[in-house]
Image 1 (cartoon, rainbow, N blue to C red):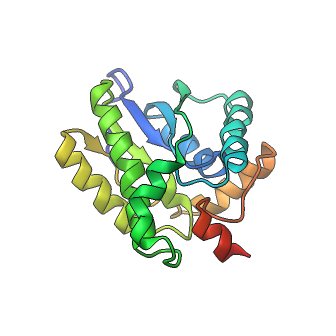
Image 2: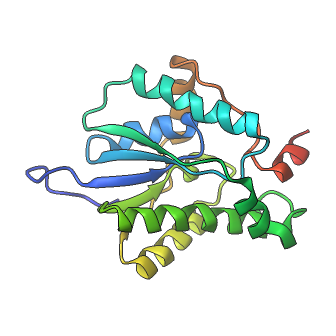
Length: 192
């Protein structure tokens, strides 16, 4: 984890988040060190109603918690075509396969590009809090994109040290909707 001198202004972090439950622990953990902008960019989520439900849950999280540093949210328009085009050849692969790698890259690339262009100091993702997500792969993609776009990436495995358990506790505390699938149409099929 990157450490910063507390005498300096808190660095600006653009944190890609897939849902409020996953974000809950990650924001709690990082807010003492960073000003955080939660970036809700998830064209993989299907259907639109699911996307809107997950997006709206962030308001519960943000109004219920007093963080040490500023935490706000940046949302972008729902665009499932970006995801569908990116994974077209791998649509029917199982969870954890090439489809997921492409999806991680799509979302982290957008985060890296915007972090760089909008003057953030660093970018990261909350995805590694899930026990179903490959933190090593996420961090490898993040580091590659950091080099490409000349911006720092915060490598982490947020499920470690009971991070996932803490996200479940916080979800209950704030009455957050916890979905039982990653969000894409392939995971909807595989979750049944």
